[in-house]
Image 1 (cartoon, one colour):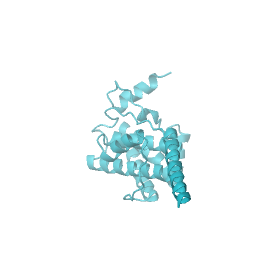
Image 2 (tube, rainbow, N blue to C red):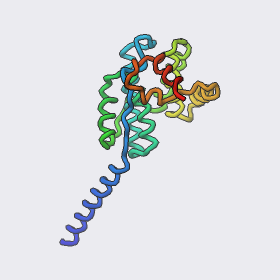
Image 3 (tube, one colour):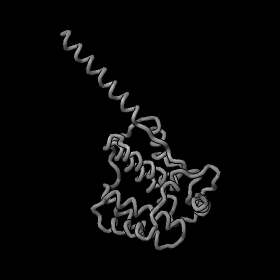
Image 4 (cartoon, rainbow, N blue to C red):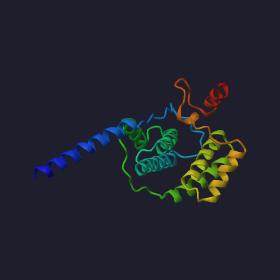
Length: 200
């Protein structure tokens, strides 16, 4: 009986040590989005912006949960959560997840409204429509959606092709432009682009 008790205690302490080690290696820096780069000029209704923000945040959280907080999943999540907050600055899911991730709390996998394949198709279709609208904010979001769609479902040839065409035409999104907005910026695409172009 004593040996069983000792084994249980050892197992308990070992699990605590593993958790402590995971906390040491789990680092997340919340994106800085300021007031957001998308204004009322964006060709989306507030309800649609909120829905995309929720689905992007859900996908980000699920990928982290599946990958157990790998560096790659956290890097992708930072981009997706930044985009969520640019679309809807007070989105509950994105705000809470950023707070928890920064404190080393891994999200649990949840059932979202769409599978990754379906969400990728929706993002691709919406992204292409936004790109065709031609307005600066619409084009930026359209390119974001297209790139994310290709990442979500690399087997979707249409999404991969559209993303690769952006790359070849040197139109890929500069994500640090979205994840690390300068604190003194007004938040518009024009102001952020001006800051980006002024950097050496």
